[in-house]
Amino acid sequence: MIDPISAVGMATAAYNGIKSAIATGKEISEMGSTLNQWATSIADLDFAHKQAENPPFFKKMFGASDIEQTALEVWAQKKKAQDMREELRSYISLYYGPSSWDEIVRIEAQMRKERKQAIYEAEERKQMIIEWIAGAVLAGVAAIVIGFIIWYIGGTQGKW
View 1 (tube, helix red, strand yellow):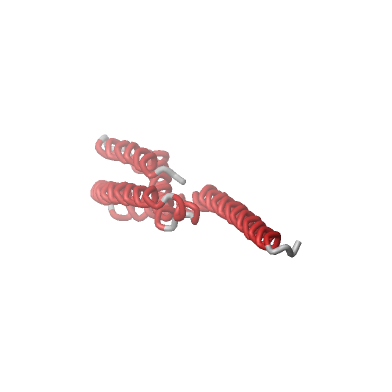
View 2 (cartoon, one colour):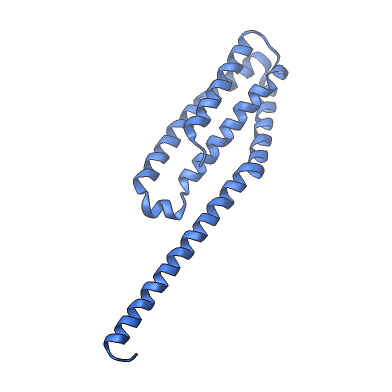
């Protein structure tokens, strides 16, 4: 799972870079890599939030307190990111106009789509494989235990 604290840390660094670039009067086109880093970090945080809302089966079974802690952590980081996003929208709209913010939102949507295709789908596929393997192992153990119980009962009754 993507660490929400790392994602917010990277988003904060990018956010501070964007704010300082705006304060020095740089054009928005000169902030491309910083905007890209910010959008990527926000996309990672959104994915972490999605994963915290729907944790894998084995975490539900064995780590209930960990799930709650992660969900609260992700929620707090998401709120922090929303505050950054709102302040950044205000700065960019004020200095460069509302159309610049619309362009950033479009870039952010494109970055989210690319990250989803490249990284998030691979993470979800890995998670699904782990769940299937854990389920198969659990089913195998259950079948062995049931078979042993049947064999033991049959042996005590003298049927074999």
